[in-house]
Structures are given as C-alpha cells and as structure tokens.
Length: 412
Image 1: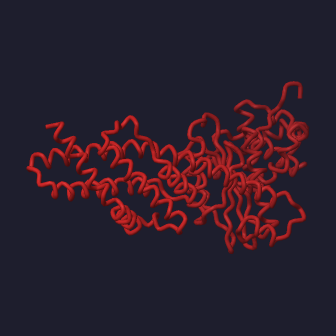
Image 2: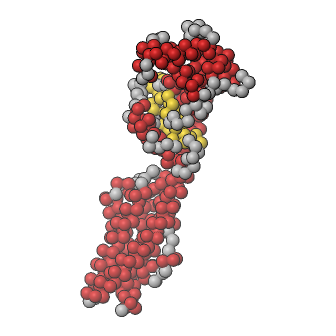
Image 3: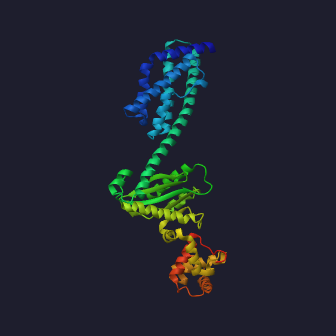
C-alpha cells in the first residue's frame, strides 16, 4: 500500500505542477485579500509572488521526487521576503499565518487532483493523509528557519535605525547653532510645543532581556502621559525618551510608580516639562541630573526619580566631595549614620518644612508633639545653636544628606 501511495503522491504532485502557472496567482491573491500586511507596493509584491512561487515549486519537487525533509531549506526568495517583511515592521504573525493558509490551500488543490484520479476511498484517504503530513512537515521546517531570519533582520534593522536616530538626536542636543527648522527636519517631528524627557535604564541584576525591559519602560511612560514617546537607545542598558505635545505634558507619577513595581529591574528619571527647542534640551538635562542623583545610591529601591523633587540635589551632585565637606561643617555630628541620628535629621527636615510648627510636624510624622519637641531640642544641642540660626544652610545640608546619601566620613 505504501509503495502505491508514494506513486499516487507523485501523480498528484505532477497534476499540481501542470497547473502552477494559474494556481500561484490564485494563492497570492488570497494572501492579499485575507491579510492586510500583504498589500504591498509593486516591488515588494513581486518579491511576495516570487516567495510563494519558490515555496510551491519546492513542495511539488519534494512530493514528486521524494526529497527528504532533511534536505529542505528556506528558498532564497522566501528568505528575502521575510527580511523585507521585518524591514517594513510588519508582524511575524502575519507572515506565519500566510504559510498556514497556503498549506491549507495546497492540500485542497491536492484533493481536487485526487478526484480526477478516480481512486478508491481508502486509497484517496491514505494519499491525502500522506500529502497533508509531508506538506505540514515542510511548512514547519521552513517556518522555523523564517523565524530566525525575520528576528535577526528585525534586530539588525532596529539597531541601524536606532543608530541613525540616536546620532540625529545627539546632534540636536549638542549643536548650539542649530535652528528650530533644521532640528525639526532632522528629527522629522515638531519641536514647537512642550517636551518631557525621561531616561530609562536597568538596575543591578538585569542582564537578561534588557531590550524588552527598556521597551516596557517606554510603554509605561506612554501610559502615564497618554502620549507615545520618541525613544532612542543610548546604550545597551539605557534608553532616552521624549513626550511631546502642543500643551504641557502631564505625568501620572503614581501610576508610573505602581507599574514600575512589576518590573523591579527598571529605573526611570524624568525631567521637568519645557517648551520649544531649548525646552527639548533643557528637560533632557533635567532628566540627566535626576538620574545622577539616583546614581548616588541614596535611595537604591527608588525606581522613579522626578527632577522636580530633586532639582537642588541635581545641581549639587557633580560636586559631592565639596558638598559633603560643607554639609559636615554645617551639621557636624548631625551627619552621623546611626539610626538615632538619621531619625533626628528626618524630624528636623519635617519640622522646618512645617515652618517650625511642632503640631504640624507631629501630624506629618504620625508621632506625638512632645516627640518632635524632644528631637528638635536634641538636634539643636548637637548643632550647638538654634535651628533659626543659619536655617537655609541647615535645610540645604539636610536635603543633600537625604537625597545624595551624604554621611560623616572618618576623621571629618
């Protein structure tokens, strides 16, 4: 029976081969009608037809000549079409769907040819089953190769596109004499409205799937602002992003913080909204300073850093040695790192922010008013003078300690 089926399979293959000239356009027309991604311009459409034709010819040859599946590879035209699909940012799912639809259509053609051979029911079923198995195995093997081709080309194309866009963005950021019209032409976007920059990066222990993590970060930023960002890859661990709009962008910081908890490896620093070309640059500098504050390690678990909350620390972060020495002179032993002293600093910060109100400070800290009173007096003893003396210096020094992680060094 097996030898007879093999012979019938060859007969069916020859029957399809004789009609391929008309069957190939039938299949390609079906692809265009059913799958929107297959509606190409003339050049890519010719490549799609060549891909379909080469696959059909390979399947027919496999059936007619009993070619082993081990010898099956992706036809060159099909490989090139998959690369072009990736370059045009068309989905891999659409490409794979076409192969499954084509597989089904081919088996239907085989059934049509079998009817003309006037076989017994058992012979027809056995032949159909054999053809379906072989065609399915061919499609599976070719698809496996196509997935690698598509994904490799997608990565290569993305890297090349990112490199070009990154160079253009860096030029806009750095070229002082660049006018607005030239900058807009380089970035292919309007820079006349408002901009909000963010730096997205991966924290420690995030060696795997970094690119996916960075894409998640950009998607979270889009959800928190309601706008799709312009993004570029700054390096393997970092992306830069800008939200641009006619009106002042609004960031839902609470939503962004909540979503970042689901991705503990991600960190995001956000600049302040700013308008125009100068604003495009300024908000990015803000985001850089916010990231620099985060890099001090003062808040290692802090996933979101807003420049608006660390602006002063951002101006100080590039002078840590000098700032630490100055803060040490202002605070003295109030800069020590033991738990009791840290609590004193926190209490003094809240007390000063509450404009010297013991009641308000106690409510903010959820402690008794007498507790705040005791801690403030203890801090004044360490300082050697009341908080009303050199108040601004004390506030700035406390802020630097809190946001930059400054502590007393040995011998200081």
